[in-house]
Length: 209
Image (cartoon, rainbow, N blue to C red; front, side):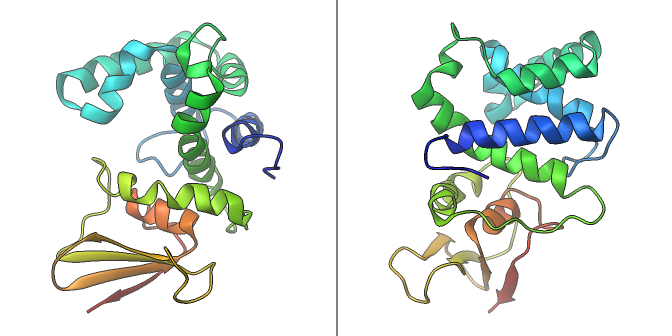
C-alpha cells in the first residue's frame, strides 16, 4: 500500500516486482500478446535504455528499434534477473533514476502495469487506493486518452470521478467534443485503465447520449 513517505512510483514498483516473481515468466497479462516475461522485459528496457524510449510514444521506425531492444532483453536475461532489474529500477547514473523524473515518468506506468499483471489472473478484485494516489492518477487521464493505445469512441468523451462528492470541483473532464457523448464514471484508476485501452478489466459505468 502506498504511504505518505514512499513515492507511489516506488511502492508500486516494489509491489509489481513481487507479483511478477510470484507469477513466474509465463503468466498472462492484460497487455495483448504479452506474458509476464514480456512485461518485465518492457519495464527493464524502459528503465535502462533511453535510446529505446522514443519508440514507446512515437511509433513508426522508432518503434521497430524499441521492439528489437525489447526482444533482446526478453531473450538475453533469465526471468529472475529481469524481475530483479524491475525491482531495483534504473541505475543511479541514468536520468530516469532522478527522483523528480521517477515520479513524473513512473507513477502511472507502475500502477497501470501492476494492474496489467493483477487483472489477468483469476479471482482479481479492484484495489482501493488512497485519495492522494487517485488524485495523481486523475491528472494523467487526459494524456493517456490521447495515446496510441487509447480507447476509441465515436463522438464526445466525458469522464467523471466517482470517488469524490457529486459536483466537486475538477471531478469531471471533457476529453473530446462531439455527439453522441460517451460518459465514463469510476475511480481515477478505473478511468485511467479504460481510456488507455483496457476496457475489459476497467470497473466503470458507461452511458452514451
